[in-house]
Amino acid sequence: MKYEITNGTINQVIVDDFDPEKVTDAELKKLKELIYKNKIAVLKNQFLTPEQYINLSKRLGTPEEYYQPMYHHPEVKEIFVSSNIPKNGEQFGVPKTGKFWHADYAFMPKPFAFTLIYPQVIPQQNRGTFFIDMGKAYNNLSDELKAKAESLICRHSVRRYFKIRPTDIYKPISEVLKEIEQETPEVQHSCVFTHPITQEKTLYISEGFSEGLIDKNGKSLDQGELDELLEATGQKDKAYKNPAIHLQTFEKGDILIWDNRSLVHCALHTSAPEPAESFRITLHDEFDFYEGVNDFNQQIAAVA
Image 1 (cartoon, rainbow, N blue to C red):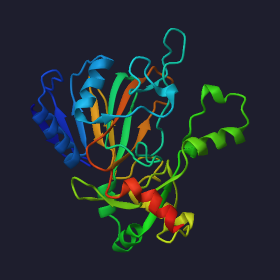
Image 2: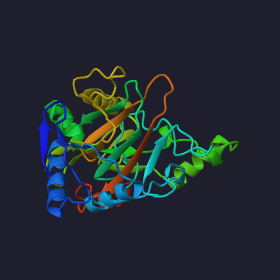
Image 3: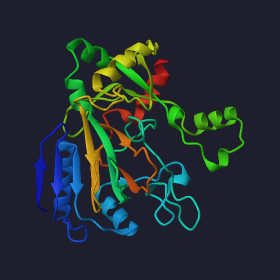
């Protein structure tokens, strides 16, 4: 496996000769190490069937089906489909996903280590994904903000960007909200954690899923405290011009893999309607998302 590293706002590992049928376990271990260190890898010239795609992902980690079936690929349920292209006259996947800053599954007790995106149909206009490295974001905070963030807990919920399902049509909004709270109740994560592999401190907040901050005693802070941190990371910049923001574009045959512990991302959608489709797989690795994540919410509940 040959690769090169391109340096930028976020480093990328570019792999041109990747063969999923011949790659060794040692090479895949090396690839994961490179992703932990550099945050993003791009496998070039990949033309895989859904079965080949999921088989590759299973060698990198443990896939998990998205909790809502309407996103599932009909042949491989672990593949999350973002698409505005009907199949056989019926909706295939869900259109216009992810147009807000987030880390995948931050609203769940156990988020993912890696995200893989495999574009199938790429619009001719600008299309891609914005990223912010939240390890760098933490390092760029003032000493005062670092100390404050390390002492806090962040509340996360999917409620603000929940996609209305076909089964929700004609339901009272109160009933839909109740189901959201029952299916994905709010979770709490440390506002800053140490990456289990790189030992880098990472700020774990997002514009999309972070609902507010609380202190170690369970006291809620003013919304301005969270807004101050989001502003410092660049997530409040609606023009996407903040120097911390990296735009990742795609070519046909690319598979993008990134470190979901370290990065928040936001989809760039074209303003005019164009066919677009991508397949996503999310993976757990062999490590806890961060130390103590498995019992973090139980500990907070005990304090509260």
